[in-house]
Every structure is written in C-alpha cells, then in structure tokens.
Image 1 (cartoon, rainbow, N blue to C red):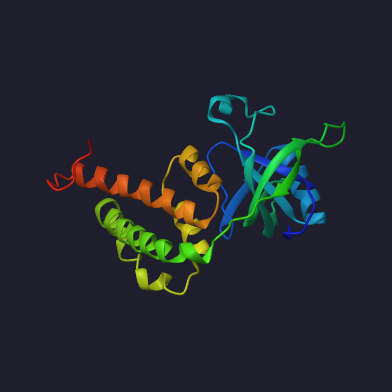
Image 2: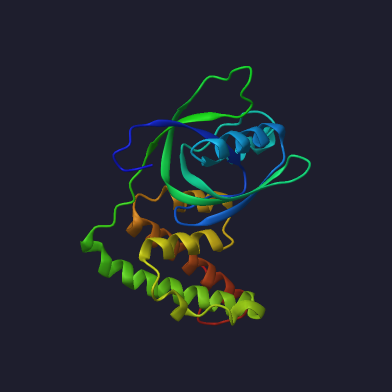
Length: 225
C-alpha cells in the first residue's frame, strides 16, 4: 500500500494473541478451511493480508466473526508452504499500519472476512529524533537488564552493537514484537500515533518491567509503589 493509495478491500486474518508490526516478519500456520481459502486466494492475488487483533472480551468467539480492534497491520506474504493436507505455513512481513473502516458483506463462496482499510502514517518529525535517541538508549539498557535477569541463557545473544545500523522505526517495532508483552499491550504499541510515541510507550513499559524484575530479585534500589 502506498501513501497515495485510496482505501481498498483486503482479507483479514484475526488472532487473539499475535500482533503484527510494520517491518517485522511473523510466521503463521493456517489450518481452518476459511483461512486455507484465504491463503490460496491471497497467494493468487496481491499476497497482502491484514492481521487484526480480536478484542479480549470476545476471544471465546473465534469460531465466528468476533469484533476486532480497528487499528491493524497489513502484511505481505513473503514465504509460503502448502502442506499435503491443505494447511499452510506462511511468513508475513509487516508493511504498514491500517485502519479497518468496515467489512465487505459475506457471500456464499468466500469463507473469510474482508475489510475495507485505509493506510495510516507513522510520522517521525526531525524535531523528535534527539528525544527518540535517548529513549532508544534507555530501551536498549532495559532489554539488556531484563535478558540478563530473566533469560541468562540467551543474554549473550543480545549485543546492542548489532542494532547500531538498524533504523529507528525497525528497531522499535522489532523490540515491541519480540518482547513478551500481553497482546493488549502490544496492540497499544501498534496504535501509537507515530514513531516517537511508540518509543515513549515502549520505554515506559520496559522501565516498569525492569523495576518489577529488580524488585523481585531483592534489589533495594528498585521498588514499585
């Protein structure tokens, strides 16, 4: 979807526990008949799918058409594998945030949902870049502390220098995707209106997790009030 593109209709893949972010790759396993049909038709067309999060109070209705958060992410199918029994393994690459403004009426042949969507910008004004740099430093430090405390077996794999050449938008989306936040928290990060706001929300969430973790380990300098 380009910035100048008018609203369009795209297939929707609703999930209760996964949030897709722009510039992030997410593996998917599609096994229900309606989503097998979605995969076939998407692969035969533009290869675009909108991943949307089901509202938490309706997760028990996944077999139907539960209400969705309107802010979602459009992704492009980069890899696909059809299994012998008709299931699909896909890798979806997040392209951009979108807003679902409505849905196309159901018809007798199409089993999956189709949404009318419009693209959303992720503004990043030059005036905000210095503040984002400070937040990025804080986020990197907090992730390092949390990895060493909670996942020491994997902490060696987190080297801040590896992310030195990663642009700010990719970095914040990748960390938001990788960290084990609850789906509702990740949805809030996706809904942030622009790169600086997403950094601020992510930094706040990680700072809280760091304080919580250090308090649990008996660090006298960190307490949650």
